[in-house]
Image (cartoon, rainbow, N blue to C red; front, top):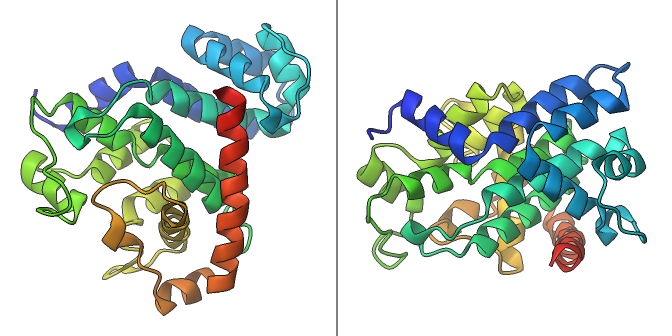
Length: 276
């Protein structure tokens, strides 16, 4: 199957129906009069997502001491203020169920990178005019394109950083499209907000020729924070170099990044220990 926009959308919808539900949930939550039962009914449409939401609601991340097997109870005790984060984490875990043989990556590594990057992005966004919730979501979803390309690789393997230091350049040569571009197509199709889409589409080059992109810069720095405690992905090391221009655009310092790394790592450890 050629990697046209149409084929990418088909593959994305088959692979991650929970992600489309995640987008619909955000629209629902924008209504200040939304009822809890409306949220529960939307989540319940996806049986796999329901399972992951209930499982994660039992985690220490949400301060729960008593387990439940009920979606109604899970969503009710987490509350509307946290349900978007909960569904985002559950949707991402649903996507990260298989190893990416093309990239020689175990599913657990994609999940760990997503969680760490999301935590760092949210913390950094709070220091800027960016929406922390959207920054968190961008960190969770930015690698979906790799999952799609892995499914369409037909035996093609990323040769490693010794031959291709930039995984994006290898993807472009091999597939005619980068995983970031694939993710952008899907996020647009699922109608995620423009700020989130712009963050993902520009996060490899947030200081691009078309002007600086604050949301992309926050995501870029967040990826670098995840790399600081060993949760980077192959072929991306050169993309997260912390430059004075990036720090200035995001209005943060190296000390801020170190603090962010400490807090993001604590979030990551808590979550992973809770859902293991």
